[in-house]
Length: 393
Image 1 (cartoon, helix red, strand yellow):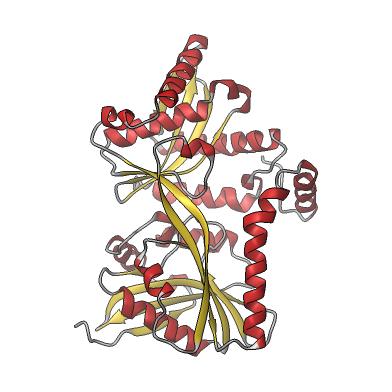
Image 2 (tube, helix red, strand yellow):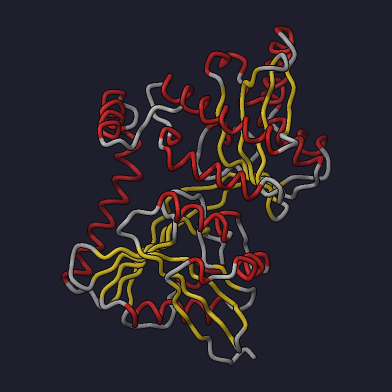
């Protein structure tokens, strides 16, 4: 069986893929995440894909059994015959990877790369946000036995996460004493002002209302700080509404919040519960109550909830924000891998130089620019004029 040929088929329409086969394979893979599920991929494609993007999903089979999926898309631009090939949703999701049955990774990835090499005359394969401990990273960083490919690897970001013990006592014994005291003090100050409760949405109607509250709160929070909120974009709101519609009843997505005096929400979190992981996807808090740190209180309650429900991991999502790192986190590295066809031709060298420049901009220059309010304000105004950054209704 291990020597059997891997057959590759390209699919250009998500309707030609079986959602159940896709998700079943994901469940059997080494490191499944919700961003790889069929429903997420489809929702993103329908709401956020640009008109110049083309689906390029590769299905790998061995003796008619589905063993791998490469959820890719591509754009043709710049030079004749050149294509930029990437994971569907690059730039919008936290993590990416190929979806491959355990034990089949090396041959399947080699088959994917060989098919891409034969399909495009010139290409840049952009494989972003792959975990450094993923089998895919080990295979791709070591090469796939092809002499006419070359590539680059950039360490782009990190994912802080907590390994959860069996009891809350065990967890808080390894948590910084000052952090424990700070959370208790803020909880006490808040309860002295009114009734504060941690809540989980129990019905779809409750979750739908909480999602709309989240959009408004996220926008209020970031615009009060002269920043910007991605949820001013109607397409991003529609994506989250679609996911809630499809995933709430399946208990894959839920909304948690800190209520105040029954009728007000102080902090809201959208989270995924997948493969015994609690994934802290995004959150917002009411800046009018910032002195009580409602988001910190909510994080503490969510960690308690995860331990009580015997999750093995609390995943903070991508980024090094201070509110994550104050907890006793471990770190997973995220890497971007860029693979180019051909030897170091002038075109390949130009593409690699451009990729280095883009990475320097994203890692060093853009975070610096975001600290200047006039630049953020200009960005908002430009997108408002283009009709992309709209007032929330």
